[in-house]
Structures are given as C-alpha cells and as structure tokens.
Length: 337
Figure 1 (cartoon, rainbow, N blue to C red):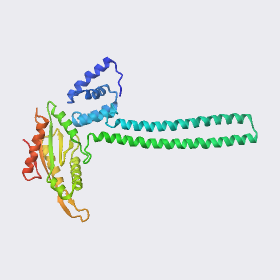
Figure 2 (tube, rainbow, N blue to C red):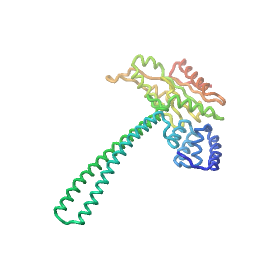
Figure 3 (tube, one colour):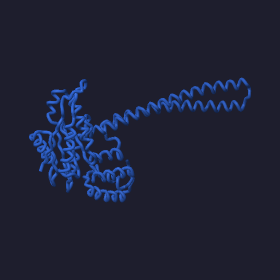
Figure 4 (cartoon, rainbow, N blue to C red):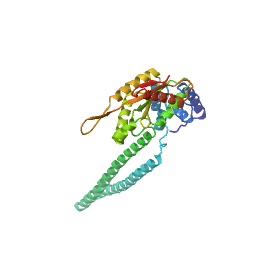
C-alpha cells in the first residue's frame, strides 16, 4: 500500500492518528503509526470497518489483530517464506506467459489465414479454389482450437497452483501465532498481548492458568499419542468457552492460560470453574472395548493484574494460585488475592 499525500496532509493525518492511538490504548510504535495513519486517512474503508469492529469488541486493538490488519491491508511480503512463494508464483506466471505467447502466435497466424482466405474468396469462384480454401481453413481451425484448448488447460493448472500458494501463505502466517497441536494461540501471542495490557495506564485484565493433573503419569501409562489427543480435547473445551475478547493460549506442555480483558477475578473464577467441570467430565475409553480407562482433571489459578504490576509478577501470582490448587487436592480453582 503506497500513499501519495503531500507533507501538509501527511502531518495532519499523523496529528489525528496519535490521539486516537492514545485514546484506544494502542502502543505508539512505528508499526502502529502506519496502521493508524491509514485509518485516519480513510484510504482503505475495509480496514476502517475491521478496526472499528475490533475497538468495539476489545476496547483497543490487540497486537495479534494489529499484525493481521497490517499484513492484510498494508503489506503482503513480510512472512518468512515470502521469497519461496514469490519464486513459485513467478514460475507459474512465467509458464502461463509462455503459453499465452504461443497461443497468441497461433492466433495471429490464424488471422492471416482468414484474411488470405477472404481475399481468395473475393477473387475466385472456382470450385477447385474453394476446396483449397476450405481445406486450409479446416487445418488451421483445428490448430487454433487445439492451441486454445492447451492454453485453457494451462490456465486451469495455474489457477490450481495459485490457490495452493495462497493456502501456503495463509498457513505460514497462522504458524507464527497458533500452536500447531491444539489450535490455540501460542506463547508469542501471549507475551505480546499481556505486555500491551500491562502497559495500559488503567489495566483491566485477569489471567487464568490451567494445568492438567497427573499428565506425565497419563503419558507414561497410555503413550504420547493418547496424551496429544487429551491436549487437543482440553484445548477445544477451553476455546469453546472463550468468546472475544478472551484470548486462549497454550502456555507450554500440558499448561494453558486465558487472558480475560475487562473481567474481574470473580468472573474469571466462574469461567474457570465452568471449564474445570467440563474437563472433569472427560472419560478416556479403550477404542476396541469402549471401556473407560481414565478420567481427566485440571487445576486452575486465577489472578487479576494490579496497577503498575509487571506481566511477570501477574504470571507468578496466577502460577502460585495454580500450585495452591494442586496442593489442595487438584481439580479445583484458586484465586490469588
């Protein structure tokens, strides 16, 4: 996305953007300058629409959404494998261009045959001449038809390849923010979001830490494949309960967490209890016999970010509450006060 604003207009947009960023608690870094410059310029109406929707839901623009908007609307070549995808796309377009050039040459040759035939028809009505013209047109019509068929085939192949490249590009973008096993956000997203929330002058967020009970023993008894299935199932239960603006994250190993903007510790504890009950209802069964072989439980720690508190301290308090839940017999929710 390129802007062609004059210096006066650009300065005015910047003057409008900065107060809006401050008002919506968006870190005033160069990355966000570009996004909000585009917003106030109204050069991309769809960007403004998406931004307004985000502000309505979150009361700010979280880093993970800022990054997506930046990629979708301002740049398209920042992903790690962009060069590979670009080269593949160049190859596809090169093949298509070659086929188009060949088809163009056949079309030009056919056009010449048509012109020659028209001239010959005007100059002669002899049956032999007519037969020659018809034969020439027949041969060249077959040639151009085959050329057009081959070109259409090339177009179809190129379309399929471009579609595959788009899927690879989308996947590479997702890989940067999503845990591949569970489909939840990864630690990178968590660190960025909690840092932004803690930097707010009036922070309003709670944190739930979740740890599956006796998971190592479960892995040892039933194998890592079964353990992965449990992780995915627990992650799905957590994700199903986390509507926007909640942010569910795989924190690491068998540990998960949820960032809860605008929720008190009591409300967060209620959500944790709801998730705890759903997890405790899980029954692992033998595939062949259907016999239940194990149940799953999890322990929960809840903490609310205090003014001037660091993200590290919030995590430590939530983790301490989690271990208190473990010490209290597991499968319960504890709040850090």
